[in-house]
Image 1 (cartoon, rainbow, N blue to C red):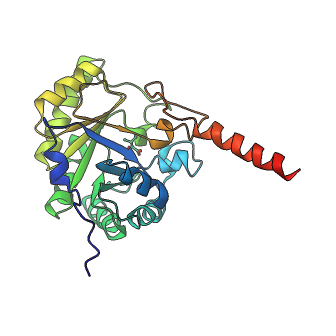
Image 2 (cartoon, protein in one colour):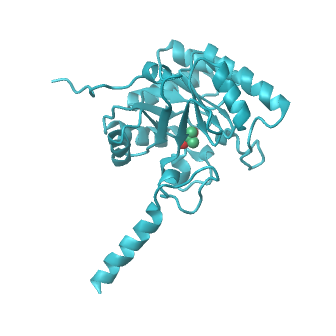
Length: 257
Ligand code: KIV
């Protein structure tokens, strides 16, 4: 009997959504959340390196290791989701061509069906090596959390200056040329995100980049209030899971008295 997931979505399916339907994408780091997102019909699930912040308690994503990513990708892959399962290449895991290929293959061996890394022209050769090896690649431009140290510890909106605007357009083109199937635009000014979306033939998936991207991605913990100590300005939580949990635990403890 085949164990293939029925109607499995591929990177090509996500790419073809451009101009037809908005791409909805959310993060998952474990089996139950992946299953719930899949049952809700989310077409793209990202095992993001945000796992470091919202699950592992690190101050930023630069602490996440390949071994930690592999652990979480394996857990999500066990859910055998219909969604496309994308995994982040963590900080400094794709500095050379060989590292990029080796680590992308390790994520695929753990169950990822595509990989994501941060950057544009400066990682073009790595992206090409990954896509030439048959591994679908999701780009990530704009505010790049793995560069938090170089940015002086601040997450800054991108596209405000003409220099950034021009660089973003060139980076988006470079990712298309290197074979990316879609690109995340994180905290890019909405007019520039719109311009990139109109310029490139692959979907842009925005986060904090306005409504005119071809899709949207969020950290699921932000969407459902499961990391209540910090919520990005651009997210309106649909649930207050953290508070509901505190209340449920208090009620249960009261019942023990
Ligand atoms: O790691 C992550 O969760 C991400 C999203 C915020 C896009 O890269």
